[in-house]
Length: 413
Length: 201
Image (cartoon, rainbow over all chains, first blue to last red; front, side):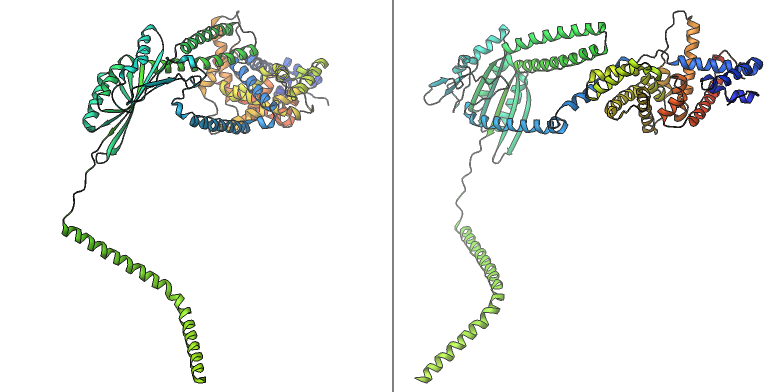
């Protein structure tokens, strides 16, 4: 098809196609010829070319930002990894399976815990090393020391547990714990904790004394709850955090507060685990620093992704370990004292009552009984009425029949 | 751009990579998409008008390509097919945020990227920056269908036929969208006559 460009309108209408090289060669030549001849159209052509040039160079070498490059690659790899898993291992199924696993573990752990109850203590993760205990009997003041767990028989002495049925006589047996307290000065990380149960007849006064003691020793209540009332006796359950250095004087002060009915103390040495964790932390930190240096020299996106993934793993681990150290520090610096204080209320003997009052009471009781009897009888009657409607005619018929038979028998005689 | 797979060798490589990627080989998929990544991002950036959405669209497009590999039958070139998916993703995104302001002016100004040219004088460089911003703003103000056609034609350099293929429209429609789009752009830019050395008639 022969195209001719015979007017400026024609030229302008085909300008876009010309710029876009979307026209046959002949028409192209015709366009160029027109532009040669017509200055106005030549100007339009130049403008259109300029415009096309500006548009073309707008995104000429547009780089894809690194985050965008990384983002889609990660997304595709995640999708790819998900698709490779067997059906049962995907998404929800995994979640359900892990929940089930947790449930089974809890079940097993729970039953294990119950059977171990008499061992008295179950610690966290690797702290299952039960360190032996002492049992104190008030009457004989003899004590037996034995290791209940074969896993750490040599650990005895690191911790000690004391129980007593009474208040006096066993303070001297706390020496093991005291030694542990002294060792703390040498940089050991020892977590001390104690439990007390106190019986008091002057609850309000003793409670005030206790709060004074707490503030005197720079301690604080972690938990504090009270149940019951003044009539039948109150019970306060408290968890008090006491600065480790003040623990001994605090416990001594508590022991004279009221009658101590239960006493337990424990010292756990976490020095070894603490220093291991610190060492691991410093290794991780230097690894992280090296990775950060590598980011600058990374040459490919894949490398960057790998570095980023590894870094975030390390950062997570560092945070977990730091949290663990902080937890230990807190427990080492502030000992935990669980205290139960219960109020002993004197039982009031009832006074014998006067004769008139007793007679009145007996009479009222009797009337009450009569009322109940009357009510029950009415209920019985009303329950019987419908049944009697059937039974009375039947009995009447029976009686008449018997009489008739008896009479006939007599007449025959 | 879509002439990227011109040579026979390239097409063969591409087919092999598509085959591997279809089996879940992420490395093959990345190798396959590397050469399209830049253009896909540019299209997404021009269509969305800001970098965050462009990044999201790029990622979504890549995932769609990956998921749809099985359905690529080779009716069109792989590149055309990929740009169609990218464009559709962007249009979906634009539709999704219809209620929002189409594109914030700040985001448009923020995305300014200019190829560095050592021979540029500072004055010339800043003039070019101004021109770019004016053009970017004018493009962002175009209606979606015109914008899609203009982006593919003037910025990406696709042929009318390819654009028709990508946008699933016929060539006539594309032609008219392009010429109407350009007219709008010219009108929008004539306001900034001082930036462009040729005075508008």
